[in-house]
Length: 111
Length: 115
Image (cartoon, rainbow over all chains, first blue to last red; front, side):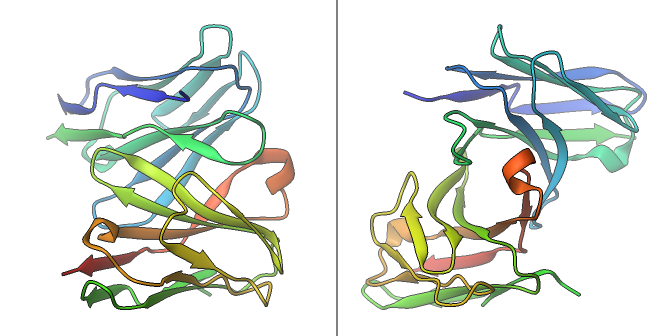
């Protein structure tokens, strides 16, 4: 069964701290995506990771992909309240553009 | 320019009724997708379309019908709604770089409640 597992599913942290969200998947893939969703809103693309070793950074967020370990990480540096949201990873398992999604990590950053 | 418009944004219906959710894009991108979002499940693909008149099933197609007679529109129909179809439905579009990146752009969502 194709699975994408995120952990933690819920994370409450203080502003200024660093933390990492993990995304594990069950079969080989070279294409992994991170999306952000604010409560009651649409999903916004954050990162597109298309090869082993890919690393992308935008502001306080950095995403990486290790296809051999079937693992992607989303690292948050010096968190700020505006980063509070739910973060999803999604994997293109069969290179057919049908994504399998993780359950999401709800991130709450307290001032 | 909203890009992707979903309508209605909110809908309450009764079991057994037919419901159509519309997705409209202001561009002419080829790939369009329908997902449902349920708590604890992330998103699950219902149907997708690679071009006008070309549609294919996703992970959870049962109980849904799609059509794509025009490139810009991709309606999703629940022919006989059931309570298990209560969900938030998202339409997504792949832009001109989609075949290279696989990146999706999402509409605002349609929240459907089936009583």
